Length: 175
Image 1 (spheres, rainbow, N blue to C red):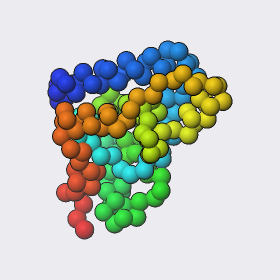
Image 2 (cartoon, one colour):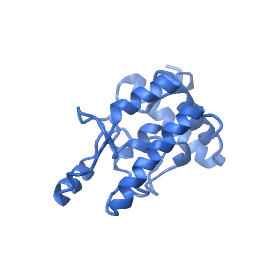
Image 3 (cartoon, helix red, strand yellow):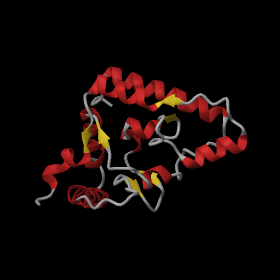
């Protein structure tokens, strides 16, 4: 998309190549349409770079009015919970079509979503228990995981510091 810088597009392409390499050798890998466990169990609302927020906003604005209304209602509900500090322990992504189990902004999805399940952190705040179980059961010790912390650093270097959900949407509701 034109909203994303060339270096960020290069990073996305590199990530996609790594993801496809894992999938090519492991047809059992659960990360695909219909697997929405991570989307239903976020630790916190999205925190994205300015370029990623721009892409998300353009994607949401392109929805037909009824879908856009549903997504905006989810955004406002999550924003209110965030501001009031009443978030549940498992935050549902506001861009998830919960009935279909699919991302409504898939082509504009953030890099964290593109890497989740394929890139891990050492402190386990970005990993999937389902994948961990599958890998352990299958003896797939040869998997070379991507490094999520390094990706976050690259995103910040290429696109600036992450902007929280509440900061990005703060003008949406009056408290």
